[in-house]
Structures are given as C-alpha cells and as structure tokens.
Image (cartoon, rainbow over all chains, first blue to last red; front, side, top):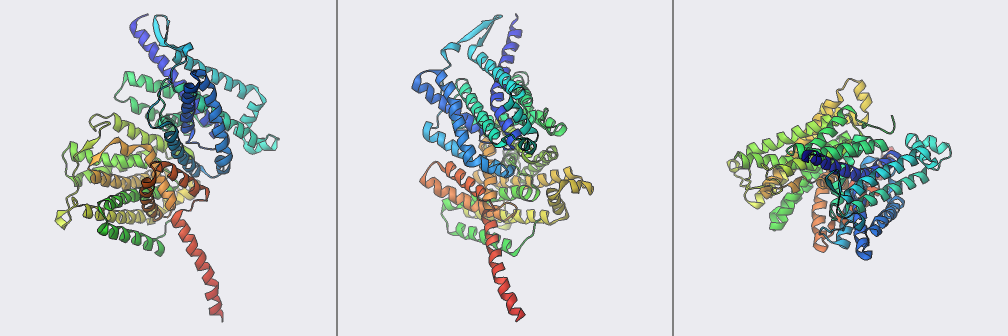
Length: 290
Length: 327
C-alpha cells in the first residue's frame, strides 16, 4: 500500500464519516417535510440539544453510552412537546410562517443552551470501546469514526427495512404519497405524523450525541450544521430516504475532497452543486413524489 | 398590489420626522440607535418588496446586505477609490448577486425557494470568510464616509450622519414604491397572485423574478453601504445567516406587504432590543418568543393591525353618516 493510496483512503473515510453524520440529521428533516409538509429550522437546535444532553449524561455517569442512549430519548421528548404545543397548530400555516416559528425556536434554544451550559465549547470523550486508532492494510484510522460510519449504514438499513417491509412503513409511504387518500383508507394519519416527527427528532438527538466527541459541543453548533443539512435535503429531494443518503454522500464527499484537491474553491463547490440541481432538477435528485 | 394610501404617507412621515427630532435632541447613544434603525429599515423595505409583494420569502438579504458592505469596503480600502464610487460598487454587486439568485431559483417555490436563498446567502458568508484578500475572519477597517461638503453636509458629524441615514430610509421607500407602482411592479405582483396565468399570458416569469430580486438586492446594497460607512469597519459578522432571519422578523412584526410596516418594525425592534438588553443578556429568547406569539396570533403585524383597526372604525362610522344623507 503506497502512502498516496493510504492518504486517499483516509480522506474517503473522512468523507464517509461526515456524510453519515449529515445523513442522521437530514433524514429526519426530509421525512418530516415529506410527510408533514413542515419545515423545521429548529432541527439543528434539536441536534445541539442532543449533544448537550449527551455531554451532561457522560459527565454524570462517566459512560459515553449513557449519553448515546439518553440523547435520542430526551430530544424525542422535546420534539413531542414541540409537536403538541406548536407544530400541530402550524401544519397548514404555509412555509413562511413555519420558517418564522422555527426560527424563533432557534433563538429560544440558543439562549436555553447558554443559560444551562454556558457559552464555551465543551468536550466529550470517545467511548473506551472505540478509543484510539485501528490499523488495517497499513492504514491507521480512528475507531470511533469507523463506528460512526457503521452506525449511519445501520440506521439507513433499519429505516429502509421499516419503510419497505412493515405496516407502519407502508402507512408512512402512503401518507407521503397522498395524505387524504391514506386517511380515507382508515390510516390514522395524525398518529403516523406524530410518530415520524418524534423518530426524526430522536435521530437528530442521536446525531448530536455521535457528533459530540468529534466536534465540540457549543450553542451555535446547530445553526452551523443546519445549512449543510438543508442543502442535503434540497439536493436529495424532500421526503425521500434515498435522496437523503445520496445528498449526504454528495455533500460529504465534495466538502472533504474539495478541501484537499482545490482548497481555494472548496467552500463554494457545494453551492455550485446546489445551483445546478435547482436549475436542472428543481424537485431534487430523488423526489419522494414524482 | 401596492397602493400608496394616505395612512402610509402619514405613518412614514411621522416616523422620519420623529427620528430626526430624536436625533437632534438625543445623546451619542441615541444617534447610534437611529442609524441602526435606518439600516434595518432600508433592509426590511427591500425584503418586503420581494417577500410581501412577490411571495419570494428571502433568507439571503442579510448576505446581500453584507456583500454590499464588503463591496463598499473593497473599493474604498483595497483600491483606494472614493466613497461615491464605493456606493455604486455596493449597489452593483448587490444587484448582480440578487439577480443571479433570483434567476437560479425562479423555478422553485415555497420552501424550496426559502432554503435555496438561505444556502446561497451562506455561500457569500463562506466566500468572504475564506478570502484572505477581504481580510477573512478579521474583516477590513479604515473606511471613509461619503464627502457631501459640496452641499454643506459633513457626514463625519454624528448628528448629520444620523439625519442622512434617516433621509436614506425615505429615499429607499420612494424607490421601492415607484418600482412596485410601475407596470413592472404590477406584473411582479401578478406573478405572485397566479404564476401560471401570467406565464400563459406570455410573461417571461423568470426575468421578472430575477429583476425584482436584483432591484430589491440593490436596495439591500444601499443598506450595506450605509452600514459600512457607519462603523467604518466590515467583518464576516455582517453576513451571518441568522441576520436574514432577523430582518424577516422585522418585516413580519411591522406588517408584511405594507412597505411602511417594515420601517415601523425596524423602529420597534431596535428600541425593544435595546431596552431588553438593559434588563437581560438573553434578548434572543425574548425576541424569539415574541416572534412565535406574533405569528401564532395570525401575524398582520403592527401596521396591518393599525389599518384593520382604522378600517373597522370607519365602517362603524359609515352607516351613521349614510343614515343622515337618507333623511
């Protein structure tokens, strides 16, 4: 194995790991949009909430896995409260009002984080099981990052199975396709919506817990990752699992390899891709509804 | 469609005169607030022009504003150009970017449009942040202000600069109103009402959308040039995406699609923010909650509420006067 080969493989793994993080975040965003027609700009804030909860859980118990398990649950509960309090009422209010409400939520969350956790960046230790690098084919790579890649693929697989093979999956697909028809066929669409919203939030919380050891935990982390996640959703096509994966891989790899190959224009490449998609495929690469 | 009603003229003039009187009698800090109001008001007018009358809800006007400020700084500092040329550069840069965004996103609607504007705005932020020649993270300083000594105005003076800023609000409002009242503006509103019908009538929809977004962008560029002259310093902070959201809050708070409402919203927002930050550092949360309440309440905004109240009063008075003429 030559050094250059090893270098590119490591870059590829970096790209894959970033893609998986984006996928965990954007899959909730895109399915919530596809099903509820609801735009949740506060999705990034929920991701940050997951990271903060995991930080506190790790600090209290001393175990990474406590945060890993607790963060999705806590964020799902937060999402539940948001859904019952605000989002249910705003479902038919039009995109602008939804954007404004959830933008207001970003502000509220930002100050909640500041009040409870302060303004400084906090660190979370990698779990002992995946600490340090792993060696294979003469390449050293962080075991934790490999774990993130594996987790992303696992979540994709589980979601795919649920959506394509189970009854609830069929209900969700029916709801995305035609909400009223699904309701006429006796599907409790409201309940399906509620479940999907909570699962989407839980995945955002999971993404936060997983990201915490790689990136540090700070109040603005949600607003920072929101834009790449939205780009993934727009490129992939709203409401589609395949689109979220494809978009995550495109954005993740373009950002990682762009920074290595052409650092001068790397930051703009993703936006060029976005512009291209908007011009030629305004509904995204894999729209859920054709 | 846009109509310049008497109420709009009255409210606008009242705000402008009020701000000028406040500037004359206010402290140094008061003048700072007035300039802040002016910058926010101009930006809010430009956002309302496309969002209120064209349905193009923009989350990139903060970036266009920052781009204008940076164009001003680039010509003024890097090339040593005169401020007048820098203002032109700010407007041209803002127009060009606005036109491009409008053209690229012309086929997208609703939430896709909002997300796309957000992303393209962020592109400007990333470009500025990564650019060494534009000062990157540090920004640029040593900017000079317009030299209006030919007409006896000295913008280095705080009072005169504040009054100049207030007059800029009036100027921007007039420009926006003239654009919206023109045949072009009517067609633009028509596209908002029914895009397919306008297309069927033979209107090149994308051109109208792109041009309207460009024109609105150039007004945001004026706000940017004003901000650059105000602080005589630019930094990537100007281009951060949440600012676009804040401007949208101002528009909603004042009244979307009223053109004068956003000016009112800017006054309320700046003074409210100032008052709240005196009490607590967590003003974000208060503004956020306020925004949620405004939208949940059905969001006509302050000016929309005022208009409705006056209309109701007039309706109550009308039958009474009608009865009199019958008798």
